[in-house]
Each structure stands twice: as C-alpha cells, then as structure tokens.
Image (cartoon, rainbow, N blue to C red; front, side, top):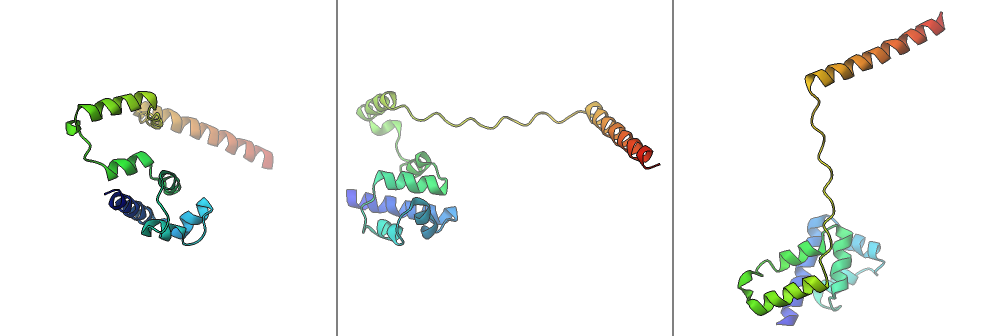
Length: 138
C-alpha cells in the first residue's frame, strides 16, 4: 500500500508542477538539481521524500498544506477518537503556521464632496504652476 501511495503523491506533485505553468527543468534549476531529477523522482527512480514535496511546492507557489489537503480530503471526524486525540496532541506540540495576514481592504471610495475637493485642489495646483511658468517666460 505505501508504494502505491507514494506513487500517487508523486503523480499529484507532477500534475501540480504542470498546472502551475513551471517546467520540470525550471524547477530543477531553481532547486539546484541536475537535469532529469524530477523525471526520476516522479517515476520512482528516486525515493520521494517530504523535503522534495516541500521544496517543489515552494518553487511553484503551491502551499504544502494545500497540497496535502488535496491529497487527503477524506479525513473526517468519523476517523475515530484515537485519530482525533493524536491530531489534537500533534497540533499542540507542533502548532500549524499562522496564516499570512490578508492585505488590508481597500479604503472606501471617496464620496462626491471628496472628489470635488480633490479636483479643485488639482486644478488650483495646475493653475498656480501655469501662472508661475507664464510669469517666468515674459
């Protein structure tokens, strides 16, 4: 079963690279690997390790947590109390990384009065500069 599962993960990782728009050669270069390393990795010629998954996901911009959630979407509360107990203990021992902060929401669009104020300020500045340049050329 484990060899089949490793082959499935390698297939998922290979597909993720393809869907990301990166070529295997580009990823190999980014990681400093020799040409053909990824082909051997995906075909089982090189043993797939967790580090490979983390490194490749990092290069293609696919969060490893998302990769594993995609690979194992079936984990549920019905897995049993022992599984849930182990999960809770692991989460306490090794807390998941904090999510990156979402960008601040864009400020509200200016109302009509604010737009008029900005236009008047811009026009005032324009005409002031125009007057300065007209006065200096005479």
